Length: 436
Ligand code: NAD
Image 1 (cartoon, rainbow, N blue to C red):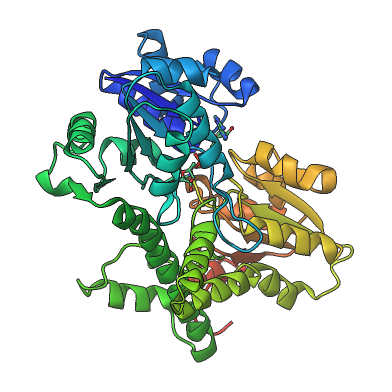
Image 2 (cartoon, rainbow, N blue to C red):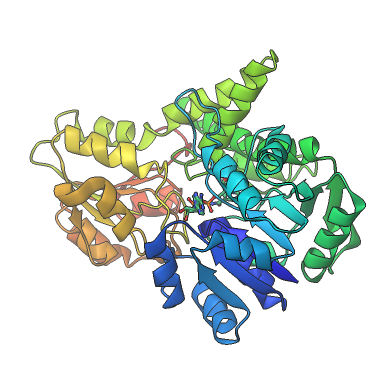
């Protein structure tokens, strides 16, 4: 099938490469000419495990191209995906300007009937608006479908190639058939992975999924705070509740608050949608409030031990990305932490195996970028762990202790066992690991 993907960011690039991998002829379009030039040279602008090889292979074999020419891509394609960003507006609603701009451009480019599929995360009713924007610009027939994306950064290719489910919101059998054909190679493992519904339900499914996951995180963060106040261990509570099949073990880890490009903006957008529809959003509002507070937890814990005035103090930070296996720092809890430490007068030494470039755009020269985890800990009065990178899980603890000026570890991901750490002479501060 001839496929065009408009928007070559995390979602567009992964979707385009995976469609090419299954034999389709794919062109990925972006308005960012610099990004397209880099991609044409096989320089991948983001870090995503396995993506570079996948792109190179499909590029070399001629199934995957990159272009800024939307008109040509639309004219050559049978199916056109929209995968541009939908960042939050000031009032929390999703900014649809990129999606609607692309819809207008597709309409102006069309010279034959087309299927347009929206992959961006968009409020309920956007398929109608996209359809109207395209129709206003062309007399050709257009069919618009909704196909929200559920990949996780850090495991995006695996998620795309072996999805738990593919959600399709359609108005016609033709659209359903085309998308079933396109996704068949990815859904072979189980017949029920392909879920067809109306467009509005598909649009809402994406927000509902992210809001449910964000709710679990805020819930567990609140349980962790209770554990600290009452002398219980959240790891044990987690094991206890996770064994209940109705609850399940996944996504029950407390931490420094959720970040990334999706959960924060999608919860906000859903709150906004509920308000507009005059439906109470109190559960979602509480999830957001709890998360905003949680993002200050690592700074608070560090302050409790080093004091509010950190002039003359050095703090090491392990991990800047909002989660492991990505270079994405959007809404990362590392940002309020580092800003707070700097405001308190501390010198900050950071390490992240992949996010140093993204970090530089945020912190500039205000922090020291360590080449390896041990250098970030060198001479520090505290080491704060923000991201659960594998390389931080089993460090040489004797070496670490010798490097730290004060053996204080604020373990934002509960990587270490508190009793073991105390036995080794560390002051260990976890999340929800009993008193202290
Ligand atoms: P991104 O910011 O990484 O990429 C978006 C790309 O679209 C950019 O390269 C931008 O230059 C391009 N673009 C914007 N306007 C354009 C135009 N008029 N013509 C051509 N290109 C244009 O965004 P992303 O993270 O890939 O997210 C895209 C959408 O998918 C969002 O709605 C997001 O919520 C959703 N989503 C993201 C993820 C994720 O993990 N990142 C997962 C699921 C869904």
